[in-house]
Image (cartoon, rainbow, N blue to C red; front, side, top):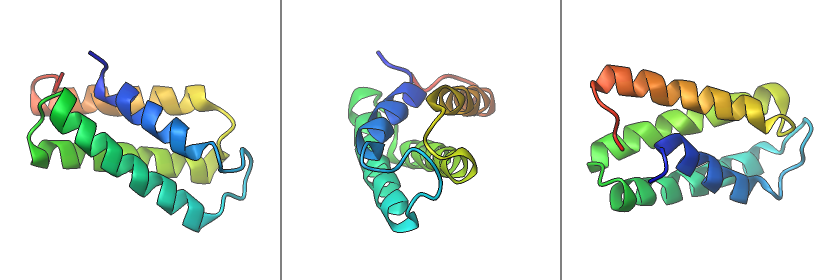
Length: 102
């Protein structure tokens, strides 16, 4: 079973294909891609990982904030940096919750 951060990354990469790799990224297109990612991720968290709705929402929202910050800072060029940031967020989430949601 995939880790939550991997699920989010897969969903975001699928939706970010239409966005330009370099700045500036159209903010409306970014918001739409992040919203679609959030919704798809939320659904997968609930059905694949069996997370409660509240936990799934908080986790998806946190990943979305990490991704939005990354895009605003660097564009879409360095996906490995986003992977690291999402995995770090996941680690912090696990520590805060006392257990991994997977």
